[in-house]
Length: 396
Image (cartoon, rainbow, N blue to C red; front, side, top):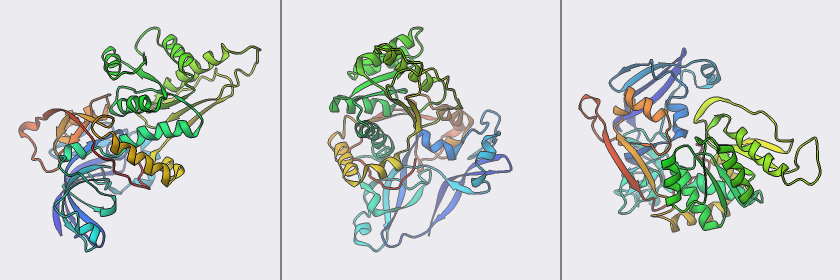
């Protein structure tokens, strides 16, 4: 047995308790490896279990722990997890310190690997050797985000191709994932409409060579959006915001462009198919739709695991090879701050990463000791992803 610290999230009696706890990790067997975790990103997909919609502003904070009220209807909606002590952290990287008796597992001992254990906010984790990616000379920081964003960005383009589309709208275009998508679309000659919220984000994407950039903070945002859709023919969009009216704005702009091309009037609107995928809930408020865009529209959810299953093995292998060819450019990631397990649960940190601001991702360093007085170690890291970790059946 190996003993180390791990973060757990428990929802019970309307209270969410997130804490660092001493845990025993079983010795690896068979094809398992024991990884000493050294770096793990906080992705939006991690927050559903980590914090959800808990009231972090008024939570009770103590060293390595916070207890927050989970408001309704979110508490009742998560009834299935009530009382369960859940590990958190989808992906990360570290060094293999022990292995089961299989040849594959033994070959990884002493190597630095990326993995998707589901409990990455931990000093140690058990992982399947077949699902680990050896990082070679790369640091754990560089390999920590080797799966979620790269495969998701590629999945959007593959989805568009599967649906016969050659243009995409992305509503959070300045994010790490959004920047990857810009580069992928350039390489694949797929038109991309990039929606951002700040002038500096416009400049950032322009520096990457993005052509169609619209700023939702501008007064003429809808005019900009209609113009970009008219130019590109983008009637398929991907939206991680979820709540509010962004999807509605996209549908309206799509229909207005399509209706402007009609030669005969129809009370039912245009026959142009319009589709928006919601792939996250950066805004947990209700999704607002004001259907004024005919009847040829579809709002659906998009998750990586179902897509990979639908795409099939050949497509997944091709995606993996694609990432390996763009190791230091297309799939680079950046981080705003590095925090220890304890620092991750301070009020300042929790409120900051739960805000899910574009381009401000946190990196957790489980082996590091907490800084004195709860101070952070700041980092501004641009991290090339040298390889992609392919895992079937993994859910964001």
